[in-house]
Length: 109
Image 1: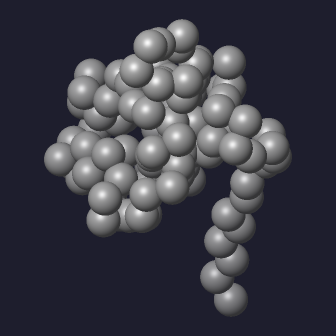
Image 2: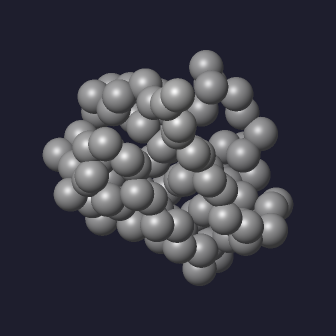
């Protein structure tokens, strides 16, 4: 199981993403996605994004990603880091990436 904690910044609506690989005859990379969040938009996303083929999703682009498509339909702000966190959790759970922290630092001069 891979878990990603997202602190998105100004909105302050934190999210916890948990991805767990399922045993399936259709795909060795089918994953269940569970998202807890303080954000209503992320809660909408959590209702419709419950599983994907992790191998397929990890190698799509922004235009074809199910995570980003459903995120847009759920009303996510373009700069919301949660979809990226979901992809990272999928990659780690499927053994396609190492579990390393990601940081976005914003500085205004």
